[in-house]
Length: 128
Image (tube, rainbow, N blue to C red; front, side, top):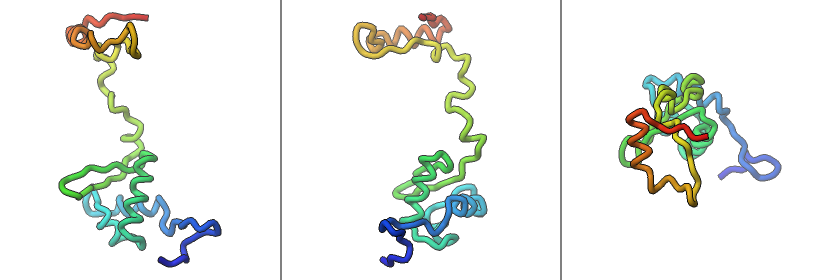
């Protein structure tokens, strides 16, 4: 490998910005892309693209899904998607009002069926 893209400390420096990667995803003809798709659109290799996509995923800017074998598709997560909660729409579900416990004498594991049944029936006990 060439040392052309290394800084003074020996670390590789990015030749493509995160915004350029996101723009390439947004400009794709499909709603999802593969690392191979991005390799065609960007001047960096597939391995570097995968690493950058994983970094962007940790930042919540992209997400991915395995679609078979080793195939993975990626998409740009919009701000609205990133801001919405996985529990959206469940605020009124009594299951989410149940108390939580750590281990020990108040261990809920032996009473899980009872708590779930009460929550489903809408009779969740409010403990404070």
